[in-house]
Length: 543
Image 1 (tube, rainbow, N blue to C red):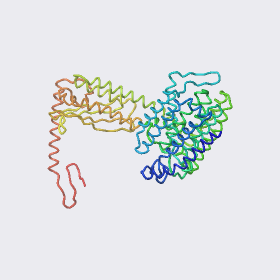
Image 2: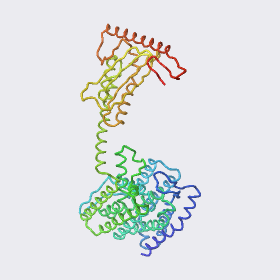
Image 3: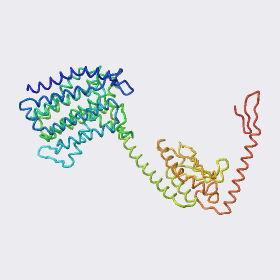
Image 4: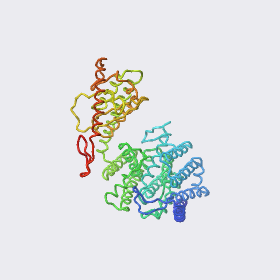
């Protein structure tokens, strides 16, 4: 017992002495967290709070190795696993310090966490089996991905919840206390020492981190603490692979785990990156409900402490009874997050259905686009290419297309298509004009289109993009098809006789000449009135 007290008090004292030095160092180097739109603090606060916690934890664990008692002998029996755990933790700490200084990308931090978790697995710290009563499930090769997922998940959960002063440190301290009690209960002095050293460091750090905070944990602190907790809970299961052992960490860290899960779910339903910033975490919601900064933190403390008490009770229960307690606590957490608005079950269900519908629409539009691409490739006639384009437009809810081919000022011919009125005209439509490429002779194509707005404007934009790709790829072929291929006001892909083509070409040239003469006469009739300062055209008056 003296060893345990020495570890706890020594870590707390070391952090209390070292933290002011880290605060002055961070301010001197400019490593401060400035206020921002997603941050709740109003003044710049130094980061790097994980450094004194890590120093205290590692120093006290190494100090125990120098003792000559039963606990020190237990440490020497697992030196490879312990060295791997401490080495990976230092690696995570250094990565967090680099992130606090230079702001690493989220994907880079994830790769670092995966590498650290893999190294721990390689030294035998794995979840090889899970037991419930007389039933034991051996994971086999699944032990590696399950362990890596567990370590990375717990690490990020604690990192995400670090949004208010003292919140992450307080929840982590309660988790250390529960795991330490379980280590005493199951006779695991190594885990007890490791958790007490981390608990002592967190206890001393809370003097500086509680609102108003003088220093933040930073990514170096939250990542280091989360990694230690996740890896230590696995080492506990290696001697006692029961449901209670696995449930303890899940329950005590229930608030961070649920917050991380719902944050990822919310981003996926909103079709955003899972690494995108989010202002709808549970602590943000509590502040919007009117709670003060300290009130929100104490609320999370109360929830976590209640769950911690139930976790301690589970140690004395059988696996079946412990499973019932686990389900009750998980259901209570789900209700809590629903009440504060961090997750809306009905809204999430509707978003999920909308997402599935959108995915089906995207696949269908993609198939239509690829089918039109196949039809328009190769040496084909104008009618075939035009029909393929119209079929693709019909499948993507376009109502009308008109192709104009020739020089911009003198179009030689036009072709138009109109969709059959099968369901009535929609209330909302989008009109657009898509210019095509031109050849060396100056012939170019232009397509005017009308598309129905069935759903969101985003879906309309996606359909316009697909049609634009077809036009961009094959507009030169349509422009070079020549007037002899197809001319008319409403061809819709039907074949025209040579006599009809000649007559339509002659009519088109006549209309072009008439428009040119009309423009020239309009320009000659334009004059400026000095009394009214108005420009009068042949077709009206323009102020």
